[in-house]
Image (cartoon, rainbow, N blue to C red; front, side, top):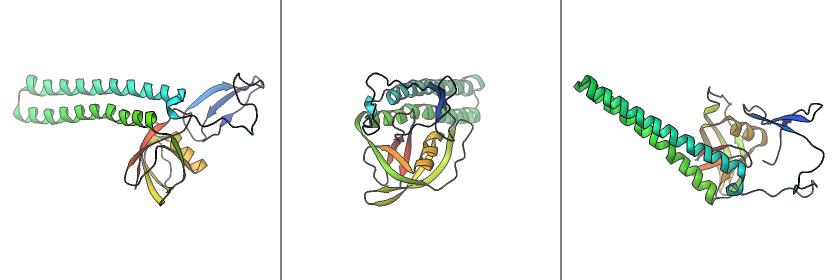
Length: 211
């Protein structure tokens, strides 16, 4: 993306950094003196950092990984509790069948969370960032969790235009696509496959489908 959006500064140099239309923001401070090791000239932009060496991306991925294993454990324990109540407490055929099915659904839901994070981790570890021209075709309707249920758009691949479908992706990702007409993905995008999309330098990663 290579852009910085912020509100301010106030008289003390403080700013609120975020993406226009996004729900997440962080406070920062503007200083006139360059940081040690920073690039002082606009004609010499900082090179794009690989996702594996980006501390923001790797720290965010570590947090997502820990959260996914925690949620997986919770769902598995919940499934075990539901099965135990239905089969050991009530001990009725109809109740046992229903609770067994419900327990399997909850257990599968929990175990799929680390699988999704493993896909994100593999892409961050092995793939470089690629910038695609993109157009968002649907309105952005955020949900209560800050994610967007479904959205669709188009991206330009080497072999022509393709449809990209977003499902339960961070709001910041769609706002960035809408405002910059760019979609950042990890690896070489191919039709008929899921790819990991995100924003270089930001704690944003999601799986999207190319058609």
